[in-house]
Amino acid sequence: MITRRNFLIHTSLAATAVLALPSLAFSMKKKEIGLQLYTLREELPKNVNTTLEKVAASGYTNVETYGFSIKDQFWGLSSIELKKILDENNLKAVSGHYNLGSFLYDGNTTELIASIEAAKILKSEFLTVPWVDEPFRKNIDDYKKIASRLNQASKMCADAGLKLAYHNHDFEFQKHDGITGYEILLNETDKKLVYFELDLYWVIFSGYDPLQLFKANPGRFKMWHVKDMDKKNQTLNTEVGSGLIDFKPFFKEAKQSGLVHFFVEQENNFAVNSFQSIKASADFISKQLI
Image 1 (cartoon, rainbow, N blue to C red):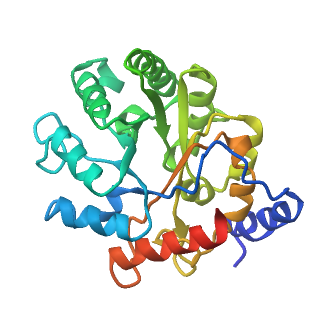
Image 2: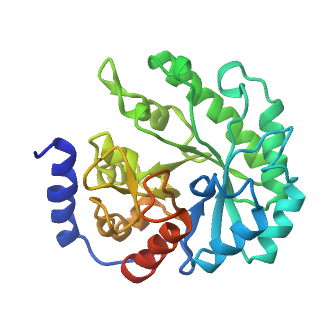
């Protein structure tokens, strides 16, 4: 059955691939492949050092952290301890996902301040907001409030030498009186201080075309999540290059996007195990996309 999503994947993107000029002259200085460490959430708590050794051996140079808390920091390690292990494996935590506690909802800056400090210790470039809890994203006013909080956080990050980004799922593309939550966030945030980490999978899953977002908002998508869509079950991920999504048109327009970093992420559906899956994704990207 041809759905709107399948049409986007197989028709419009394929046509764009023919028209787009093959250029990788975007902001990345060299071939750097990143991994969102949430992919390895089962392995990291068991042995951070061994896990990160395998990440580096699989072809990754960058990582994006997740799961920070004031109490436990990163899987029981302090930011200083994690930075040491990253350095030992020649990995850079260029971004991190930080939930910021209740800041987005009530303005409490306790977790935000701690997150900024952790990101500075890790020498990250971006502090990324990964999620908005369901009760706080029900209408236009909710999204305008979130946008206001992002503006506030972006100034605090800028003062600390960091950039703020927002990572999407699919719920941001639901419409509220004819406008999506994502449009509100794009329109209501400071273009000079608030950036976006575009999860390509979730955009396509929602029936939208990332290329149209690039065109309408040039330079704002400094980071991407690159995860493929399973051919049999579109709600599942799969290794990059083995699913439904053709990533070549996106990489050809990386300069328009403003791309600086991208991260492989696979939340489920590993072919054999997560380590083999991340290597398969890195191999495909290295040979076919960059």
